[in-house]
Length: 125
Image (cartoon, rainbow, N blue to C red; front, side, top):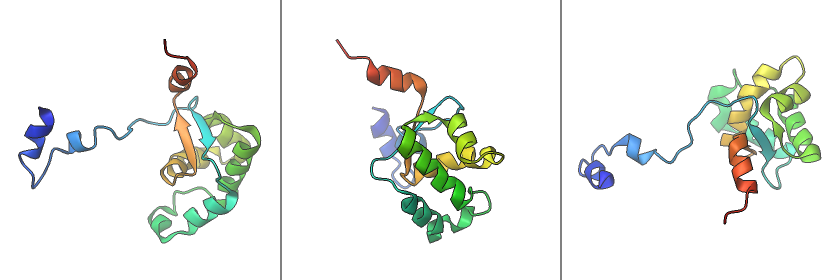
């Protein structure tokens, strides 16, 4: 099997095999963003202020934009990435749009392609 071959060279296993299940795609404007259950604006603030975020502070959105995104999702449910970025950060939507991926990495939001949402809604036979 491919896994057996990859593991045969244990000092450096095949990274393509190891990370094959990791999602890898560019965020698209129509992808749906939803709040992870229980997430609050305080959670967004604690993630942003964490030392783990220090390296990216120059490119992360402002705290006000992050908390506005959390509040919009809490009030409205899921919405497209483009719509959320414009609602939560008018005039600065590009920064928040990029920050949505960081928010997903920090387990604050979930991002789903529209076709995946449609597939989940369709019952299996």
